Image (tube, rainbow, N blue to C red):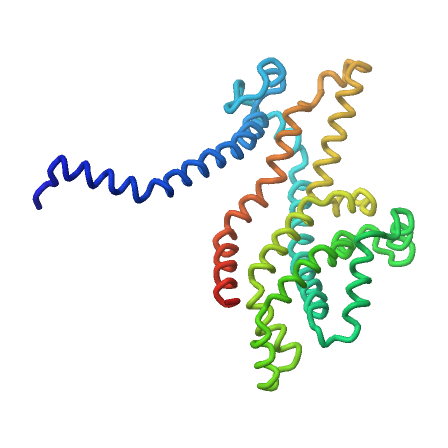
Length: 307
């Protein structure tokens, strides 16, 4: 095959650049934005592997100035408890996300049906809970004294099964679905359950994927419910366990001057905070990266089916 002459090669290169310059510019901008978002994450990871003395002396950097595993050794003093907390958090996240999506999508589907008589009163009832709630003390009495959910996995799941904002997001999306599909299904003899399961749900993949991701993050990052209702260490979720570890480290650091004994076992406070962030975000980040292609594929399929 004959080689392309130099002037022809130059014209070809210029033509290729002129055609692809907008895409190259967009890719360059996105690369810069990606680096801007990645740099703080890299700094956190680097600080978690840096010794406390080096971090205090040299500050934060993209690479550990003095490599150390003291922070992770302090967090994993009891590996069994960490693994148990991971199991609790994963169980709560999976169960809560699945049942939350089911209940909220059913409620949103009812609110999107114009032939439902009680649609407006029910929508007002759901909206009212966004403005007012029962308050912390009445809610605590209800859960502990009447429902008796204290020290159970159910207390970490039930309060978040219905989020009014997510319900209205799903309702808005359901209203945009083609009504012809639902009317055709009714003419073919399909009941409401069949319409919901075989038409509404497949067409709502983008909305369900988005709300599902929000639910996963909500259940995974929650520690407030455990602080209020969980006393048994075997039921500690990961976030609350890390919170307790940090609280103990802060207590030891605050009282280190009171006793020479405490000074010898002083935990690395700053690096422990960074290591906690890495331990907490690691699994959920890996899970998101593993499910990202399905998330994007669901949005694409949903957009094609909705046309």
